[in-house]
Length: 418
Image (cartoon, rainbow, N blue to C red; front, top):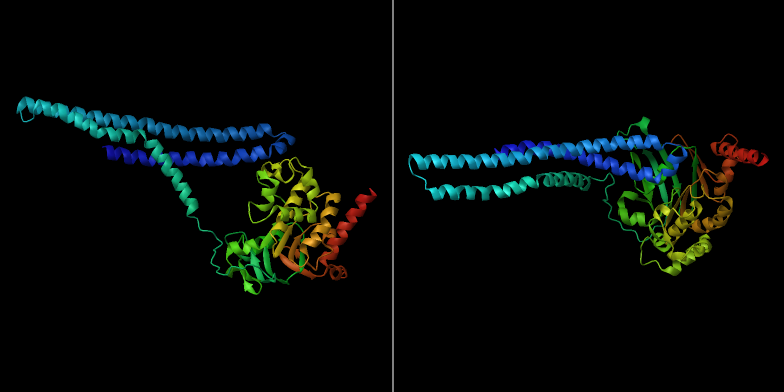
């Protein structure tokens, strides 16, 4: 009976705790996101709507918890009842035997229930811990599901490059985020181009044309659907993934800073990078002056995501971070799109020094910031439509780059005249 009861309740309690863990995951995702975006919620006066959503999530979480408590409240008494019935039956049977035949002594009748009670004691303890055990099993199942997840990016490479020359070639590369990689879902379609060592390539195009996707696949964040990418004439899959990424530095549009000092955010806790090297890189970028004005300078405590720093300051720190690691391939993803004109002027010269004799990929909507690059690659709806030097592309009156250039400078002139 105990085995049967345990089996029945085990399945029900397990499902109840699975619902509890799922609701906890939903709540843990919901709360930090809303707290981080509190200003947006307040600006759009959406507090009541968000509170309504939170109450609904909390209601489902409470209901899932009540289900698990209900099953436990039933299971533990069932164990106690079965134990009591077993003892009662044993005493009744023994008493009947003594009265009728005398085959069982009175001492045995007294001793046996005591032994039986001792037998049931660990079973009761297990029943008392039943909820804890089931919760642990459900939680461990979720943990092992994550641990057992196979990454789509297999690290099968055996080449560990200490340094890359920086020749990058895309050969008929197509890519889709969708699991079903059909042609209609392709973000990039049959892209082919070459960037030689030390060259700088600007990637431009309308929003959604696939600019950032090129950077993502070059970093091996996603697998290719078709084609291949060669780095120094070697398929980039042949390189050890971690060693390969170590030779690439990225400055993203949305700069992420960790809780810690400015120095720790620049060095990423790499003890091999000296303080002198960081200061030298900061001076080159133009960040040293503003860092020294912070309380504590390079030892200034940065809040999570760099909340106490301006967007321009965060991007300057990310430039220094990229420079101190001395990458062979540099990626600037919208690196100057959120910087004011004065700060942009400060770092524009630093960018030119940063990309000097270093293979560089630059994504920017403002074409005025990429006139110094060697090549411009123009994307439209995931297809390569133009590639060449900026001055050469401007000579084509029907070209996409010429049209984008004129549109931007026309808007700038209209804004200036207004």
